[in-house]
Figure 1: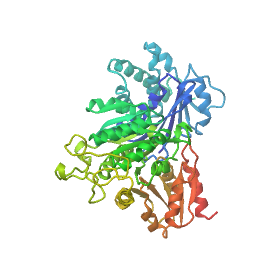
Figure 2: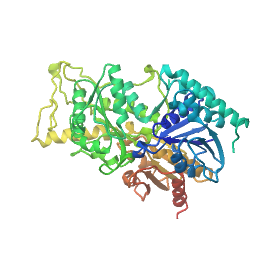
Figure 3: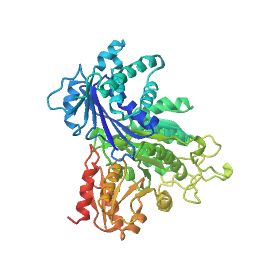
Figure 4: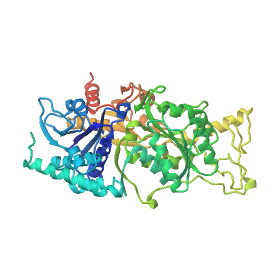
Length: 185
Length: 375
């Protein structure tokens, strides 16, 4: 099954890295086919940034994301820009402190990724918290795979911090998935 | 070893694996990551990286490096390829092995720097003046960026000709699994060296189209000139006979080896009545469209060109009768379409895009239906 994922936010949040890690985790460690394409253009210098991942058990022909099954939005602007692309019945994942939902949403999963990252002392790992959350909620990538891909992407002295960030996000995601803490609306 | 590389990084790694130890270039989107990665990797393997003042100098530098005995490469995009043309011609005339990577963006001129084009097909072939033939290859995935970069070096060495790797922005920036074979499994070709004594060596005497090549510092006389030259390498700029012999050989060494150089991927072609012809990233969309059409009973296949130049004339002439209709899908206004038409001798359909994006499978599928049903 072909699954399309769009990660989005503003420049500086590590949105491009998220897509790269997710696709690499799937391709190398889950043994699936995966393609990563960054949004590439002058607009990447400010405003909404995005990166795109296609995951499939079969050969991936067309490499781009046109109708995401999952949209991860970490800024209001990105949410407003990309939410209309979301596939019918697709899942929207947001940083609940950064995105204010408008009416008429379908499936939504919320996480205070940036707040969790701040509680760990580094706001910069919000993207990794989000990746953990994304992994638990969507199950498109295995936990082991995403962990390996995250840890090989960060400098040695930040491994612990990133692992913690990933786990916090993942735990939160599991709870949401199980409906124990905040439900998928 | 399995890596997760973008096309640009895969290309640079392919170059290193092929034995490239010299890179001269001038950064240009969307090829810049190739230069960036070569700047990182070449010092690690004892190679040389130079950022030149422009593309003219970059091309000149890799020709010089090649005559110094190195495998050399440059990488650019359309506007840079235009600037390299004079020295690409010099490379063809002096039979200098080298690889020129052109990551195509939409043109003409500066066009759309960050977005795909596939319109340098003709510039790759005859962008320089005079008669010559060149080799151009086109990858559809990061894996092929790796594989075909190695192949480009091998062909450059074997045929003593600049080889142009026609990548495109899409394949250059997408990341995908790339399998790197162990070193001993990678086929590497080195240029033929003279077997005779230096006193008997004629640097441009070819027994089988391609003369053995001695480089500077190897004890042989090295004459390199863009002027029409005889077998000694001496200028003979007023002799039509020497010109006749030389230019004929420069062209024939590629033309007569077309079958050997041919590299085509056929998909679902066994019983196809309609054939899609495409190359580069666009061919991936075509494959998706062919799969969709097959599910609905259309006898459709895909011909994907990995070797663009020399063009597979004989291949298309042969299948011209079996295939009722041809549809060429390309991100330009019909450059390959005219080539196919020339070979098959009948009207060929075109689904072009002027650049900035590749075709979506739906668009191609729609065209297949239209043409197939004769609408």
